[in-house]
Length: 140
Ligand SMILES: [Zn+2]
Image (cartoon, rainbow, N blue to C red; front, side, top):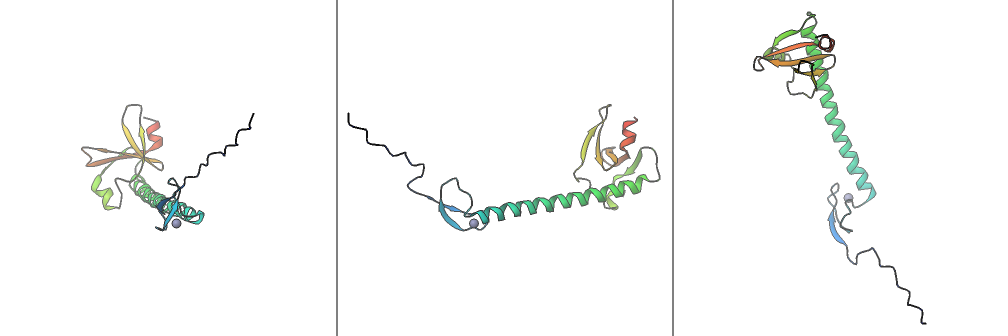
């Protein structure tokens, strides 16, 4: 019997390449359609800039949280019980109301925002803010 003509493995390479655009450099290049970067250097650069952007945002949020924690501490320092503050007074001090916080729900179902060792929540249609320590929350 005649031996079969050895078949060549079908190539996974397409006979054409696609024009692509690097997201980092904006350079046009030809490559497999699922390729993203023109080069390893470009990929690295892109990931680094993403990282830099994230670091910047996190730093900003940490700054915001620190500032808010300091303001809460300032208001709370004279108090040892839940404290009610007019929201405008907090804002005047530089408190950023929509800063990221950790949300907590007490056993009584009331929700609090945690910043550092303080918790706060709006009351009276958000016109006033109740502040206390997280420890106080555990002793309610
Ligand atoms: Zn590139």
